[in-house]
Length: 330
Image (spheres, rainbow, N blue to C red):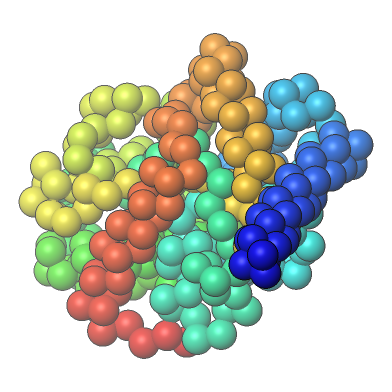
């Protein structure tokens, strides 16, 4: 009799616990419907990442049934926004739209970034990949990678400075790889974002820069800069005439950077699932796909599990490159 009573009580306790979880998730969903969602962006308003966030946020509000407020916490390559995400309550009201640099690279190059990507965040979904690229300024006569290297050797005594949007970023490591491959003395000039770097490229203050295709594409189309090489296993659809670094003999750069959404760890799974479903629907809208594709993104919805794996593999790839470069976290 005692055993039977205990089993019954145990089943009742488990049932109450499960009901409690469901009630908590239901409450979180209801709150999400009534409370605006903050979508953190770690870069300034008007930049490529901000435009992407606003494009998606405008449509997500209809799918989620609540307003989506873009909150720019610019600075330190997304580090400030990541710290804000860590500090946010895991109630389904705060998400973070970002790319690979903040999640995969910063924790490897900064001793104390103020967050741990694995411990503090949970991937929600990925939505695109993109390519980093080397572009030359309008005042630089080179029209190809080969011509750029030849120009540096002949006109610059084998030395040049290449702009990068952030210190200890993938563009900076690309500068080192280019120098080693082509036996030229090129140094990275770190900027505080792609906008000031582009301003100096357009003003011919620097002869070249490395950044993302979304950051370069409009000035490339206007003929103000010339993209001469891109990372990735294949050429970019918006730049079919531009060869990959692999085609030019610089191997190991096939893994493309990603864009995705993250939430504070502990965010209820039903909330994450709901956001993922909404994002998938938004990405299938022709006007959204057209705008993001025109910016140089390869639009691809990656559900939570797939995206988590993508982040892990990308992080591991660049961990090997960073270690081989001899870089020491600052």
